[in-house]
Length: 595
Ligand code: NDP
Image 1: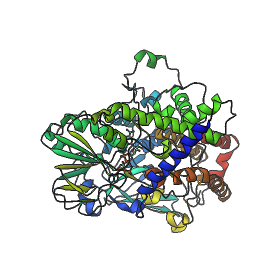
Image 2: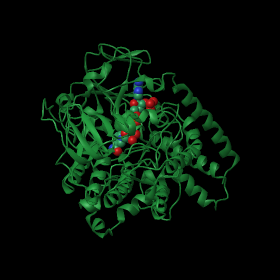
Image 3: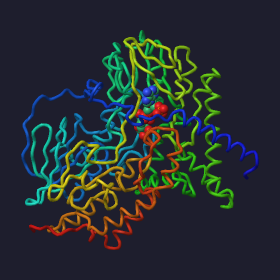
């Protein structure tokens, strides 16, 4: 029931959220950052996990499928391609091995922050039982390698290699691929799965290259400097003053591990994260054995229904993700018998949820001033929700100090440390937990020159905005498939959408292989229709994000036009299934000119 008190509380909190947002908006937006391996951060990019191979023999052959990216997107696509009967599959990645983000990120404390039973792809087929509800990053990486072995995906892979050009050869009706290592080969199909949060970013601040101490980004952890490994044991920090910059999902996992060893730890905060209950637990083998075939898909769909605020009769995952603002909003609306205005239900539920999270901080952190600075003031889904049963308590340790910059961030670096709130802090080590660039455009994000029929560059064809059918194919770029967040559904359980996309793409490839005389390319009409569908449904989402405190969810306060399918993966699945059932494949079977 909504009362006058509730309305007053909502008005007050709206004003507070807006004030907190306004003090963080900055004119330079995304330009405040630099990127690993470039400019001032040239030296931050080295691969800590695999020694650089100076030279290798170049390849000049023909393959059936080239996959850009050896992370989970590429791997599930490779797995489905194998099942489709595709033989010669060439993975290409700049990393030294498979794993994508789980290859690069090996920081202490790294773990799945979505339940592993729904996050880890192809669990049923690969036949592995995750050891915990939220397994470690290393266990996730091992799962990626298990997929590689299970589907024999390593054979033709090229690592420490970057695709430079992907050019469609109109005569051969194949893609010609060239790489940073001098390879040049032809490929019948190409799939681009370069990841969304793939390019680590750091604050491009004055003096950052004058700092004489040690520094690295969390995605390139330097265990030579810290000692220990992903399980902890950072014994070389016992005499070090350490600063960690950033308090997002990464920092929530790292901070408790650093605090175990550092002589002094400074946690530099610009905006506090929400920190909800984690409640990790070991997997019960009996429960695992009792699961029926198809359980993973069912669990994933149930999770999405709840997280997207669409309601569900039961809650299979039952964790804090399934209790986020929109999930609460739907529960409240149902409880009102749908008599309450949905906008009011969702805002009130969000307010109550955020109040609970603010109380959790106050109940855990003993120092009142530190606690109030750790309380988040924005709507729950303005930023990626955070989860930890360790992070907040860390601030009760005497050698851990919060450097709250009240939304302004670090001002500058010096030879000995950094300046925040006008005060210089001298440190031995700075760890940047400052996140990643978000890019949805596969050609620019992977840094690849993609040219389709008649040599037309993809950015030119997309000059007025992205153009795809269902996010995976583009007219004029036959047999080229995109994976990730494009004009398709997005999910916080990212591997869910990757598997959905891979299965769909490979259904079309299977059909094309059966027919033999076709290329997979959408008709002009089907592409136009989908682009219109997507463009017609963006504004509500954009408006919510525009009101949010800045961060990567809203491109630092200036959300670009939303191109994702707003209703989420479950409804998108229905769209794809209906499309298949009504002969949609005919729209992407383009006769070969040289058949
Ligand atoms: P985020 O982008 O979420 O966080 C970056 C942090 O750096 C923010 O707290 C930001 O503050 C802060 N920051 C940036 N510039 C400055 C500055 N100049 N001074 C002080 N602070 C600054 O990055 P994360 O790596 O934490 O997480 C990125 C995403 O990766 C997550 O949202 C999640 O999707 C994924 N992830 C998944 C995990 C998993 O599944 N295990 C674990 C970790 C991450 P502000 O908020 O003010 O911008």
